[in-house]
Length: 367
Image 1 (cartoon, helix red, strand yellow):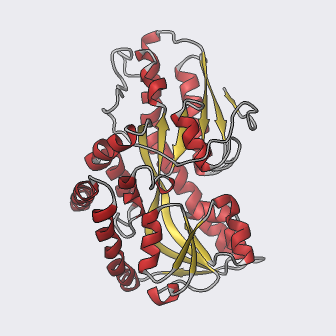
Image 2: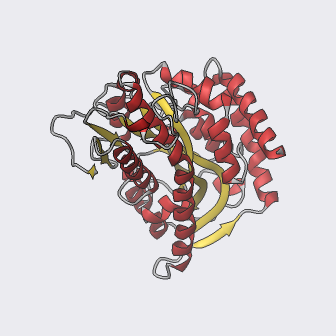
Image 3: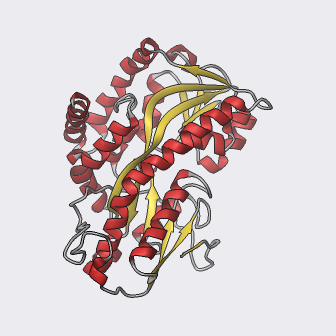
């Protein structure tokens, strides 16, 4: 059973910094199909768990990828616990801003959160690695494989987040990032002086500065108005988000750039998780594993449908531009500056994590 609630009167806004972390299948006590699931079928060997009610906060709204994911995860946990565990799912703004949500997770006000690394750059500098453009492959399925299996991400980067009191359960993609603008964005020259909205991440800002843009950090809750009124001239997001948030209504151009992918993380408060009995931990772990493939399918379905809707929106026509490989190479060359910056300023282990991840991506591409 899933219950959605409005803003809790007892929850105070707690704005500082965002945090998130990721873990692989065998890290952080994850033991899907373990001793309490001898049949490997997700029923914990028939062992009854304590009745509980948990809270799960996301950065998106009803019907968007994170909310669909969180609701399906809640259903799985409820089913696996024979109805003993209920998870209340909250969308963006119901418990405050993105900043508030991370602090709420850290302090145990909520047990679970989906958090994007783009909001955590000042907390875990190494987490800015996901802001590097043209780092991952164009094949999103291959990228998800890397996110699932990467030692750089699921061990070394995850440890950085755990030091901040947030435990990773899974890293996953919400799809390739694309650009929208009130003017065409096809070459680096098009970004000269361009007011580009970004997340609050030093490396994202640096990436767009390398193209000659004037990046501006802004919460997505303010973005539609910002685009409409000209406070910013363009933005980046996966297609499903662009269409659902109606950004294409106030932007004349959509560039299929595939310059990055939107990586997000399913996270849990570590004190909460570690305080659970093994049977209850196994329920969480099994649900997380089942949601890996399902999460990928959700974003793919929504992104494919969104592009069709944008192209068919005759009342608010949007010109769609797809970058050629030669055009992508122009941006790729400039993106190298941000990698150098990350190695030098991305935290104590930035260089090690980046070089390991590059090797892992190249190995996955070779296979």
